[in-house]
Length: 167
Image 1 (cartoon, one colour):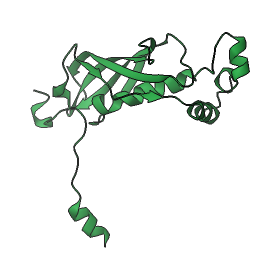
Image 2 (cartoon, helix red, strand yellow; image 1 turned 180 degrees about the vertical axis):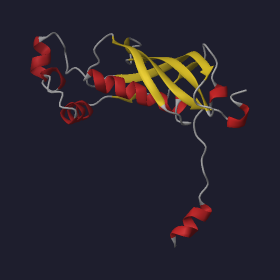
Image 3 (spheres, helix red, strand yellow; image 1 turned 180 degrees about the horizontal axis):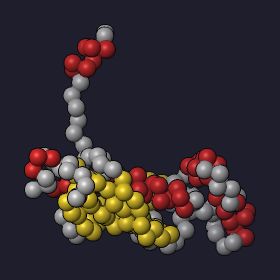
Image 4 (tube, one colour; image 1 turned 45 degrees about the horizontal axis):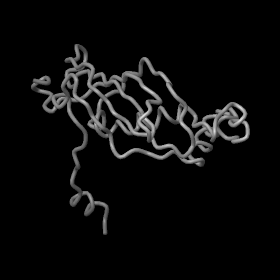
């Protein structure tokens, strides 16, 4: 089968929300969550050169009062951030940054993360005629509902119809 045949049969799947879909105060409970394994934590810590023994040495973690290894906080952040993408920014638009990131409680290997985001604000962009600017407050919780991380993130979010300017 030729490459041209595939492209002729392919159907573009439109994903993600557009600027018009967001309203101040709107809450998104992101997908089913993610259990962080020993392998996840060790691999991430090694790949990012995070050689704190809390992240790969159970005996060391126990000397500091933990029952298990602590999950690298940047893995916690990235996992929670990643869970929010499908609902918040998968529709496309430039990432503008993260503010006020706080790691509240340690997460341990074997814990399951869930994520929730609330729309904090949205406005029409003055510099980008195809997108508005949306800010969300995102929280990550462990399986017991304990908040482990929180942050604000901001993105350009495309208008459904750029000709309408988000109206």
